[in-house]
Image 1: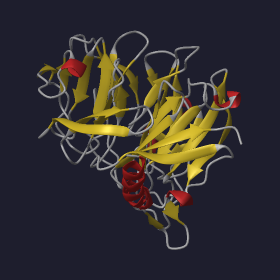
Image 2: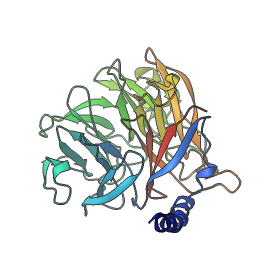
Image 3: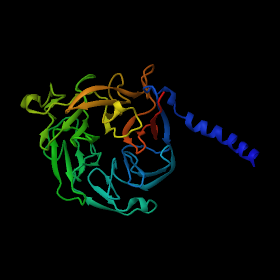
Image 4: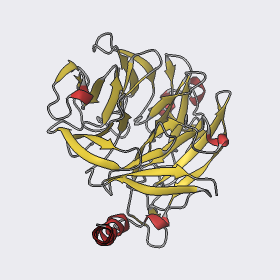
Length: 365
Protein backbone atom coordinates (compact mmCIF):
# COMPACT_ATOMS: atom_id res chain seq x y z
CA UNK A 1 0.00 0.00 0.00
CA UNK A 2 2.85 2.38 0.85
CA UNK A 3 4.47 1.71 -2.55
CA UNK A 4 1.17 2.30 -4.33
CA UNK A 5 0.66 5.59 -2.50
CA UNK A 6 4.22 6.67 -3.38
CA UNK A 7 3.63 5.89 -7.06
CA UNK A 8 0.33 7.78 -7.01
CA UNK A 9 1.99 10.85 -5.50
CA UNK A 10 4.73 10.66 -8.10
CA UNK A 11 2.15 10.61 -10.86
CA UNK A 12 0.16 13.49 -9.38
CA UNK A 13 3.17 15.74 -8.72
CA UNK A 14 3.87 16.56 -12.39
CA UNK A 15 0.20 17.35 -12.94
CA UNK A 16 0.20 19.76 -10.03
CA UNK A 17 3.41 21.38 -11.21
CA UNK A 18 2.03 21.73 -14.73
CA UNK A 19 -1.16 23.40 -13.46
CA UNK A 20 0.83 25.87 -11.38
CA UNK A 21 3.31 26.57 -14.21
CA UNK A 22 0.71 27.72 -16.71
CA UNK A 23 1.09 31.24 -15.33
CA UNK A 24 4.44 32.92 -14.62
CA UNK A 25 3.73 33.65 -10.97
CA UNK A 26 7.45 33.98 -10.35
CA UNK A 27 7.24 37.34 -12.12
CA UNK A 28 4.93 38.79 -9.47
CA UNK A 29 6.85 41.02 -7.08
CA UNK A 30 5.52 41.20 -3.52
CA UNK A 31 6.91 42.57 -0.24
CA UNK A 32 9.11 40.14 1.76
CA UNK A 33 7.18 37.31 3.39
CA UNK A 34 4.26 37.36 0.93
CA UNK A 35 3.43 34.54 -1.47
CA UNK A 36 1.03 34.31 -4.43
CA UNK A 37 -0.58 31.06 -5.58
CA UNK A 38 -3.45 30.10 -7.87
CA UNK A 39 -6.65 29.78 -5.83
CA UNK A 40 -8.97 28.88 -8.73
CA UNK A 41 -8.39 28.18 -12.43
CA UNK A 42 -10.76 28.16 -15.39
CA UNK A 43 -12.98 30.89 -13.97
CA UNK A 44 -13.63 32.52 -17.32
CA UNK A 45 -13.72 36.33 -17.19
CA UNK A 46 -13.50 36.37 -13.36
CA UNK A 47 -14.50 39.82 -12.10
CA UNK A 48 -16.11 40.91 -8.80
CA UNK A 49 -16.12 38.65 -5.74
CA UNK A 50 -18.34 38.26 -2.69
CA UNK A 51 -18.09 35.80 0.18
CA UNK A 52 -21.15 33.88 1.33
CA UNK A 53 -21.92 33.48 5.01
CA UNK A 54 -21.18 29.75 4.70
CA UNK A 55 -17.84 30.40 3.00
CA UNK A 56 -18.83 30.00 -0.66
CA UNK A 57 -17.04 32.46 -2.93
CA UNK A 58 -19.27 34.05 -5.56
CA UNK A 59 -17.63 35.41 -8.69
CA UNK A 60 -19.19 37.53 -11.42
CA UNK A 61 -18.29 38.06 -15.07
CA UNK A 62 -18.72 40.97 -17.44
CA UNK A 63 -18.43 39.60 -20.98
CA UNK A 64 -19.37 35.99 -20.32
CA UNK A 65 -22.83 36.44 -18.77
CA UNK A 66 -22.16 33.92 -15.99
CA UNK A 67 -22.02 33.88 -12.22
CA UNK A 68 -19.93 31.26 -10.42
CA UNK A 69 -19.93 29.72 -6.96
CA UNK A 70 -16.60 28.33 -5.77
CA UNK A 71 -16.32 25.71 -3.04
CA UNK A 72 -12.86 25.63 -1.49
CA UNK A 73 -10.71 24.66 1.48
CA UNK A 74 -9.70 28.32 2.09
CA UNK A 75 -6.41 27.78 0.26
CA UNK A 76 -7.56 26.39 -3.09
CA UNK A 77 -10.77 25.85 -5.01
CA UNK A 78 -12.32 22.40 -4.84
CA UNK A 79 -15.25 22.97 -7.21
CA UNK A 80 -16.36 25.75 -9.56
CA UNK A 81 -20.13 25.76 -10.12
CA UNK A 82 -21.89 27.89 -12.73
CA UNK A 83 -25.06 29.13 -11.01
CA UNK A 84 -26.34 31.57 -13.67
CA UNK A 85 -25.88 32.05 -17.42
CA UNK A 86 -27.11 34.37 -20.15
CA UNK A 87 -27.14 37.50 -17.98
CA UNK A 88 -26.43 40.99 -19.31
CA UNK A 89 -22.93 41.88 -18.03
CA UNK A 90 -23.50 40.56 -14.47
CA UNK A 91 -20.46 42.32 -12.99
CA UNK A 92 -21.91 42.92 -9.51
CA UNK A 93 -22.30 40.34 -6.72
CA UNK A 94 -23.09 40.86 -3.03
CA UNK A 95 -24.40 38.69 -0.18
CA UNK A 96 -26.74 39.59 2.66
CA UNK A 97 -28.83 37.44 5.05
CA UNK A 98 -28.17 34.29 3.05
CA UNK A 99 -29.21 35.84 -0.28
CA UNK A 100 -27.01 36.48 -3.30
CA UNK A 101 -27.59 39.75 -5.17
CA UNK A 102 -26.47 40.02 -8.80
CA UNK A 103 -26.47 43.26 -10.79
CA UNK A 104 -26.89 43.27 -14.54
CA UNK A 105 -26.80 46.46 -16.61
CA UNK A 106 -30.36 47.55 -15.86
CA UNK A 107 -31.63 45.25 -13.13
CA UNK A 108 -30.78 43.54 -9.86
CA UNK A 109 -31.53 39.91 -9.00
CA UNK A 110 -31.86 38.30 -5.58
CA UNK A 111 -31.30 34.56 -4.98
CA UNK A 112 -32.58 33.64 -1.51
CA UNK A 113 -30.95 30.78 0.42
CA UNK A 114 -28.25 30.61 -2.21
CA UNK A 115 -25.70 28.41 -0.45
CA UNK A 116 -28.28 25.68 0.09
CA UNK A 117 -29.31 25.81 -3.58
CA UNK A 118 -26.14 26.11 -5.63
CA UNK A 119 -27.18 23.41 -8.07
CA UNK A 120 -30.63 24.86 -8.75
CA UNK A 121 -30.77 28.49 -7.59
CA UNK A 122 -33.99 30.41 -8.03
CA UNK A 123 -33.74 34.15 -8.46
CA UNK A 124 -36.13 37.03 -8.83
CA UNK A 125 -35.66 40.55 -10.14
CA UNK A 126 -36.02 43.12 -7.35
CA UNK A 127 -35.24 46.23 -9.41
CA UNK A 128 -35.29 46.80 -13.18
CA UNK A 129 -35.24 50.54 -13.75
CA UNK A 130 -31.54 51.29 -14.14
CA UNK A 131 -30.45 52.66 -17.56
CA UNK A 132 -29.94 50.10 -20.34
CA UNK A 133 -26.80 51.55 -21.96
CA UNK A 134 -23.87 49.12 -21.90
CA UNK A 135 -21.22 51.83 -22.05
CA UNK A 136 -20.03 51.84 -18.41
CA UNK A 137 -23.24 49.94 -17.68
CA UNK A 138 -21.61 47.08 -15.76
CA UNK A 139 -21.96 47.47 -12.01
CA UNK A 140 -20.00 46.72 -8.85
CA UNK A 141 -22.33 46.32 -5.85
CA UNK A 142 -21.90 46.02 -2.09
CA UNK A 143 -23.97 46.35 1.04
CA UNK A 144 -23.11 49.29 3.24
CA UNK A 145 -23.09 49.45 7.05
CA UNK A 146 -26.59 50.94 6.81
CA UNK A 147 -27.93 47.69 5.27
CA UNK A 148 -28.62 49.26 1.86
CA UNK A 149 -27.31 47.89 -1.43
CA UNK A 150 -25.04 50.42 -3.15
CA UNK A 151 -25.13 50.43 -6.97
CA UNK A 152 -23.12 52.80 -9.21
CA UNK A 153 -24.46 54.08 -12.53
CA UNK A 154 -21.65 54.99 -14.92
CA UNK A 155 -21.68 57.70 -17.55
CA UNK A 156 -23.01 56.26 -20.84
CA UNK A 157 -20.12 57.87 -22.73
CA UNK A 158 -16.51 58.96 -22.45
CA UNK A 159 -17.56 62.50 -21.57
CA UNK A 160 -21.10 63.87 -21.50
CA UNK A 161 -23.53 65.77 -19.30
CA UNK A 162 -26.46 63.62 -18.16
CA UNK A 163 -29.10 63.90 -15.46
CA UNK A 164 -29.67 61.45 -12.59
CA UNK A 165 -29.09 58.60 -12.18
CA UNK A 166 -26.14 58.73 -14.61
CA UNK A 167 -22.63 59.37 -13.25
CA UNK A 168 -23.63 58.54 -9.71
CA UNK A 169 -23.68 56.05 -6.89
CA UNK A 170 -27.16 54.99 -5.87
CA UNK A 171 -28.54 52.75 -3.15
CA UNK A 172 -31.53 50.42 -2.72
CA UNK A 173 -33.16 48.65 0.17
CA UNK A 174 -32.66 44.84 0.03
CA UNK A 175 -36.19 44.42 -1.35
CA UNK A 176 -35.37 46.74 -4.28
CA UNK A 177 -37.36 49.71 -3.01
CA UNK A 178 -36.52 53.34 -2.29
CA UNK A 179 -33.74 53.81 -4.87
CA UNK A 180 -31.92 57.10 -4.34
CA UNK A 181 -28.74 58.86 -5.52
CA UNK A 182 -26.18 59.39 -2.76
CA UNK A 183 -23.15 60.71 -4.75
CA UNK A 184 -22.87 62.57 -8.06
CA UNK A 185 -20.12 63.50 -10.48
CA UNK A 186 -18.80 59.91 -10.53
CA UNK A 187 -17.81 58.87 -14.05
CA UNK A 188 -17.41 55.13 -13.55
CA UNK A 189 -16.85 53.56 -10.15
CA UNK A 190 -16.20 49.81 -10.19
CA UNK A 191 -15.10 49.43 -6.59
CA UNK A 192 -15.93 50.78 -3.15
CA UNK A 193 -15.79 49.91 0.54
CA UNK A 194 -16.43 51.43 3.97
CA UNK A 195 -13.73 52.22 6.51
CA UNK A 196 -13.91 49.54 9.24
CA UNK A 197 -13.79 52.14 12.03
CA UNK A 198 -15.47 55.30 10.71
CA UNK A 199 -17.92 53.41 8.43
CA UNK A 200 -17.41 56.11 5.79
CA UNK A 201 -17.55 55.34 2.07
CA UNK A 202 -14.44 55.28 -0.13
CA UNK A 203 -14.55 54.51 -3.86
CA UNK A 204 -12.43 54.34 -7.00
CA UNK A 205 -13.38 56.28 -10.12
CA UNK A 206 -12.03 55.93 -13.66
CA UNK A 207 -10.97 59.14 -15.43
CA UNK A 208 -12.04 60.11 -18.92
CA UNK A 209 -10.14 59.21 -22.11
CA UNK A 210 -8.86 61.25 -25.06
CA UNK A 211 -7.00 63.96 -23.14
CA UNK A 212 -3.58 62.36 -23.57
CA UNK A 213 -1.42 59.71 -21.92
CA UNK A 214 -1.01 61.44 -18.59
CA UNK A 215 -4.28 63.22 -17.82
CA UNK A 216 -6.71 63.04 -16.25
CA UNK A 217 -5.92 60.77 -13.29
CA UNK A 218 -8.01 57.93 -11.92
CA UNK A 219 -9.25 58.77 -8.44
CA UNK A 220 -9.75 57.47 -4.93
CA UNK A 221 -12.63 59.40 -3.39
CA UNK A 222 -13.95 59.75 0.14
CA UNK A 223 -17.68 60.32 0.73
CA UNK A 224 -18.34 60.74 4.47
CA UNK A 225 -21.88 61.95 3.78
CA UNK A 226 -24.55 61.74 1.10
CA UNK A 227 -25.08 64.45 -1.50
CA UNK A 228 -21.47 65.18 -2.44
CA UNK A 229 -20.43 65.94 -6.05
CA UNK A 230 -17.04 64.72 -7.32
CA UNK A 231 -16.68 66.83 -10.44
CA UNK A 232 -17.48 64.78 -13.54
CA UNK A 233 -17.90 65.94 -16.31
CA UNK A 234 -16.65 69.42 -15.42
CA UNK A 235 -13.49 68.77 -13.43
CA UNK A 236 -11.12 65.79 -13.14
CA UNK A 237 -8.67 64.98 -10.39
CA UNK A 238 -9.63 68.08 -8.44
CA UNK A 239 -7.72 70.51 -10.70
CA UNK A 240 -8.14 69.53 -14.37
CA UNK A 241 -10.88 71.54 -16.11
CA UNK A 242 -12.56 69.44 -18.79
CA UNK A 243 -11.84 70.65 -22.31
CA UNK A 244 -15.51 70.29 -23.31
CA UNK A 245 -17.53 71.02 -20.15
CA UNK A 246 -15.06 72.71 -17.83
CA UNK A 247 -15.95 76.26 -18.84
CA UNK A 248 -19.36 76.03 -17.15
CA UNK A 249 -18.24 74.99 -13.62
CA UNK A 250 -15.15 75.59 -11.49
CA UNK A 251 -13.15 72.79 -9.83
CA UNK A 252 -13.55 74.59 -6.50
CA UNK A 253 -17.28 73.78 -6.59
CA UNK A 254 -16.63 70.05 -6.19
CA UNK A 255 -15.10 67.57 -3.75
CA UNK A 256 -11.50 66.85 -4.73
CA UNK A 257 -10.16 63.26 -4.68
CA UNK A 258 -8.52 61.90 -1.56
CA UNK A 259 -5.82 60.56 -3.88
CA UNK A 260 -5.09 60.86 -7.58
CA UNK A 261 -3.87 57.67 -9.23
CA UNK A 262 -2.05 57.28 -12.53
CA UNK A 263 -3.93 58.19 -15.70
CA UNK A 264 -5.76 55.30 -17.38
CA UNK A 265 -4.63 52.66 -14.86
CA UNK A 266 -8.28 51.55 -14.54
CA UNK A 267 -8.58 51.35 -10.76
CA UNK A 268 -11.40 48.89 -10.06
CA UNK A 269 -12.06 46.70 -7.01
CA UNK A 270 -10.89 47.84 -3.58
CA UNK A 271 -11.16 46.60 0.01
CA UNK A 272 -10.01 47.73 3.41
CA UNK A 273 -7.81 45.03 4.88
CA UNK A 274 -9.50 43.69 8.01
CA UNK A 275 -7.57 40.45 8.44
CA UNK A 276 -4.81 39.51 10.88
CA UNK A 277 -2.54 37.34 8.69
CA UNK A 278 -0.65 40.29 7.19
CA UNK A 279 1.71 42.43 9.33
CA UNK A 280 -0.02 44.94 11.62
CA UNK A 281 0.84 47.94 9.42
CA UNK A 282 -1.53 46.63 6.74
CA UNK A 283 -4.55 46.71 9.04
CA UNK A 284 -7.24 49.04 7.63
CA UNK A 285 -5.14 49.88 4.57
CA UNK A 286 -6.92 49.81 1.21
CA UNK A 287 -5.92 47.30 -1.45
CA UNK A 288 -6.81 48.47 -4.98
CA UNK A 289 -6.81 46.39 -8.19
CA UNK A 290 -5.55 48.26 -11.25
CA UNK A 291 -6.96 46.54 -14.32
CA UNK A 292 -4.59 48.38 -16.66
CA UNK A 293 -4.82 50.88 -19.51
CA UNK A 294 -6.37 50.05 -22.86
CA UNK A 295 -5.50 53.09 -25.00
CA UNK A 296 -2.32 54.58 -23.54
CA UNK A 297 0.73 54.63 -25.87
CA UNK A 298 2.71 52.86 -23.12
CA UNK A 299 0.65 50.61 -20.87
CA UNK A 300 0.13 51.47 -17.21
CA UNK A 301 -1.52 49.73 -14.25
CA UNK A 302 -1.84 45.92 -14.22
CA UNK A 303 -1.00 45.70 -10.51
CA UNK A 304 -2.37 45.83 -6.96
CA UNK A 305 -1.81 49.02 -4.98
CA UNK A 306 -2.16 49.87 -1.30
CA UNK A 307 -3.23 53.10 0.38
CA UNK A 308 -3.05 53.98 4.06
CA UNK A 309 -5.71 56.42 5.27
CA UNK A 310 -5.86 58.42 8.47
CA UNK A 311 -8.43 61.02 9.40
CA UNK A 312 -10.03 60.95 5.96
CA UNK A 313 -6.69 61.49 4.18
CA UNK A 314 -4.32 59.19 2.30
CA UNK A 315 -1.03 59.35 4.19
CA UNK A 316 0.86 56.61 2.33
CA UNK A 317 0.45 55.00 -1.08
CA UNK A 318 2.46 52.50 -3.12
CA UNK A 319 2.71 49.25 -5.06
CA UNK A 320 1.81 46.02 -3.28
CA UNK A 321 1.93 43.47 -6.13
CA UNK A 322 3.16 43.91 -9.70
CA UNK A 323 4.50 41.84 -12.56
CA UNK A 324 1.43 41.13 -14.68
CA UNK A 325 2.79 43.69 -17.18
CA UNK A 326 6.12 42.89 -18.83
CA UNK A 327 7.96 46.20 -19.16
CA UNK A 328 10.39 44.74 -21.71
CA UNK A 329 7.74 44.30 -24.40
CA UNK A 330 4.80 46.26 -22.92
CA UNK A 331 2.58 43.16 -22.91
CA UNK A 332 0.37 41.97 -20.07
CA UNK A 333 -0.39 38.35 -19.21
CA UNK A 334 -2.88 39.20 -16.44
CA UNK A 335 -5.28 41.95 -15.39
CA UNK A 336 -6.33 42.30 -11.73
CA UNK A 337 -10.01 43.21 -11.29
CA UNK A 338 -11.15 42.80 -7.70
CA UNK A 339 -9.77 41.95 -4.27
CA UNK A 340 -11.40 40.01 -1.45
CA UNK A 341 -10.20 39.64 2.14
CA UNK A 342 -10.76 36.09 3.38
CA UNK A 343 -11.53 35.08 6.99
CA UNK A 344 -8.03 33.60 7.41
CA UNK A 345 -6.55 36.97 6.44
CA UNK A 346 -5.36 36.02 2.96
CA UNK A 347 -6.21 38.25 -0.01
CA UNK A 348 -7.84 36.97 -3.19
CA UNK A 349 -7.30 38.78 -6.50
CA UNK A 350 -9.46 38.06 -9.55
CA UNK A 351 -8.05 38.21 -13.09
CA UNK A 352 -10.45 38.36 -16.06
CA UNK A 353 -7.63 38.04 -18.61
CA UNK A 354 -5.97 34.90 -17.25
CA UNK A 355 -9.35 33.52 -16.05
CA UNK A 356 -8.04 32.77 -12.56
CA UNK A 357 -8.23 33.90 -8.96
CA UNK A 358 -4.99 34.28 -7.03
CA UNK A 359 -4.40 33.93 -3.30
CA UNK A 360 -1.87 36.16 -1.57
CA UNK A 361 -0.77 34.97 1.85
CA UNK A 362 1.91 35.95 4.34
CA UNK A 363 4.44 33.98 6.30
CA UNK A 364 6.95 35.83 8.44
CA UNK A 365 10.31 35.68 6.59
